[in-house]
Image (cartoon, rainbow, N blue to C red; front, side, top):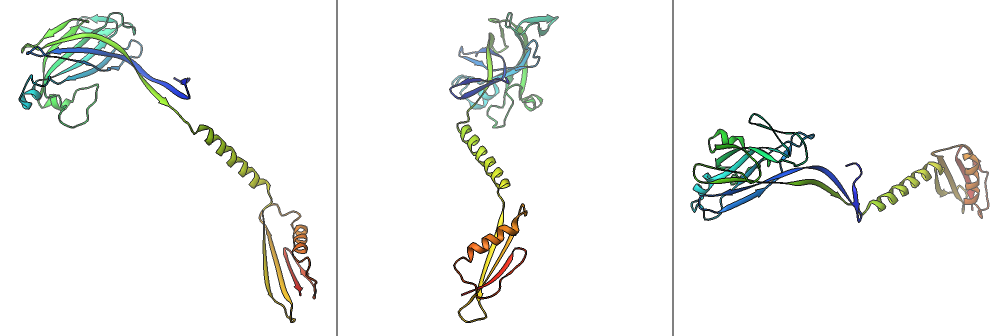
Length: 261
């Protein structure tokens, strides 16, 4: 589970496994319906499982929809991959399917398939049983091939079981791009921490003498202010290069005034 199967870039995880019993219901008119559905493993050591099956009569068996709804078959019980009986109580002695058996309760009535309400695939709707819309008609312990006949002639047969697995398949086609962007972002962060951050302002205004311009430069060291004074002086000299000074220059901490023609 922690080391998934990798196939063509896909990762396949095993989330669960167990058994799916198969039941065949023969209705009084001879028509059959089979259903195979996974049951929930209740004991991980022996895979004793519980679950439920809902079977709707075939079309035409009961032409009246209301009568058809009242003759749906529901099965709920336990499945043991290796049968072990304590009296009539069923349990499992081994997780491998050596002697499969079921202990089931069989119901007839409205299973809620047409109600539109969500139901668990492992349990019958208890409201249907409480409201007497779903009534228990038989109880039996069955081995593969054995069946039980209901009072109206319906036959419920246990056909055996098959294995099932619950898989999760994952694929991340953009995984490489995410790695590249993450490394680029980290590189940018490192560069931003290493580079010295500076801010410089310049303001030009008419000078006191005719034909002159007063140039004011200011600067701020956001990080690592050591040596900022010399850097600012050099920057001012480069900015004013080519402008012959006509007045005295005044320089301070990150501030310089200069008259230039």
